[in-house]
Image (tube, rainbow, N blue to C red; front, side, top):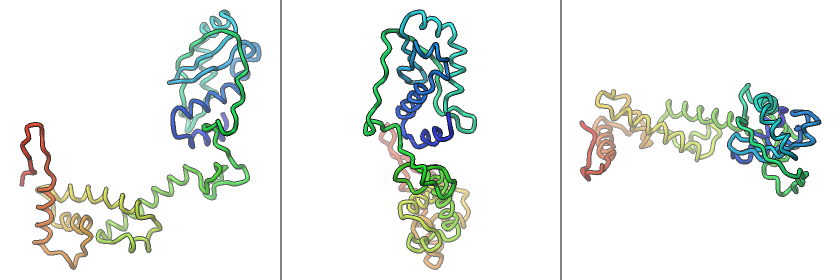
Length: 249
């Protein structure tokens, strides 16, 4: 399959949608995969959980396909979309059934949720691939950009853990949801480190500044210890016995 097929596959969110698209492409290229003669007597019917169901017009063709299953699987495998050498969808099993072959009716445009419309005239400003209708940047570059933003927020918080979202926006272009998520994850890690009995005072201070949005001027040893102990007491759980357990001091 072509690069455009891999782009479409990357945009599809569910395994069902990906299988439907691969089945569509296998039907289109079936004569190239199995040869003109075999294609006149067979067609892919359904792809589900790595099993391709093939419809033939008589039992002899079903038998022929089964005896050549290994060779046929290899030919189908070459036609499947790949990314970095890895197949995006696999076909591991072939199942045959026979009957009268009928041309699959063309689905209407509004019945093709697995066929995103690509606008060849509009391309991703970062990598240049065609964009899906409604996109301003491709999904791959969007993920890279989002991860880069999270890394920048992480670095800002490590230097100034008390910083607010409003102040962080001057350093990093981000939304409040992303800022809050990064701060929450870093805060969980920092507080876990601060609760260690062997934790250093600098680690405790960092955790308190990050989770309570307190600047260094607002801290004192007593305040840090009180917040850490309060957090230690809060992190309790109730086991099946009903007894409440706490972290050991």
